[in-house]
Length: 107
Image (cartoon, rainbow, N blue to C red; front, side):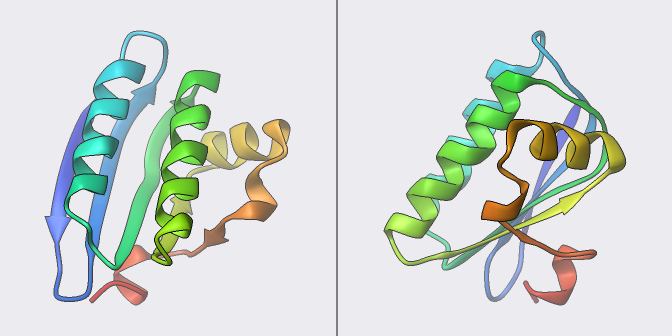
């Protein structure tokens, strides 16, 4: 799994490439909490290249979303088919702002 933080004028995008499984969940969580520490007004997690999203990573995605919403920030997700299925199966897909391209909302 590859994780890249992309800093933009209006926020930050975390790009995920690969599987978010048991072996990578802790690395993903650590990067997400690093992302939160930046206190950006807008945050997007780009999961378009995630070929698997496990339950531990879904929990991280939800926890990050709650923290951003609590501080009145904006939170967006861009999803691959496996990521969309994981969020839909867990019942959390409708909770998030889903965008096709995070660059469209964070410039």
